[in-house]
Length: 189
Image 1: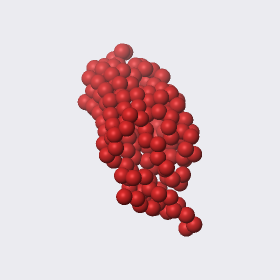
Image 2 (image 1 turned 30 degrees about the horizontal axis):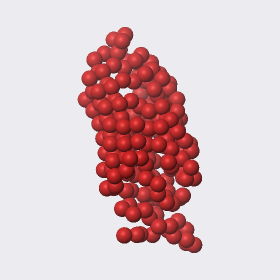
Image 3 (image 1 turned 180 degrees about the horizontal axis):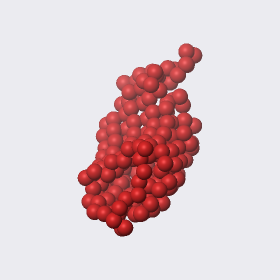
């Protein structure tokens, strides 16, 4: 089944198979494929939101980096992602929202740590077991951080030190005891 995604009054772009495209929302949502990596699709360049759910992607590489997309939101939910390349988010300088819930990530990937434009990062229900003091230091725009239902047991001192915009943090259902000095330095306004 093929559906058309109208970018302008002049031309139409084919919506990728097994996807839903919404012209008004400038979004593409796909479900039900099994890939080893990100699917190579003809994604309309006007798309701002791309969602993949219930997939078997395993590895998030830099497949989309050279597509000329100006994505603001990427959601890979329940896609069995266990690894992301260092360049996976290269070219997405205006990415604001990254949701990677219900995957198999054991750490916050390096490519995320260097994506300073991210404001909403959700990685609940993964296998993250540790965080380093510099994991979030470059994410100065971060407002929402969700890491619930992971295996995190300890929070390094000053892990949230540089996150002056942080408003919401969810670390529920981890195995966190106390921070090394007995308290957690975090300021939420």
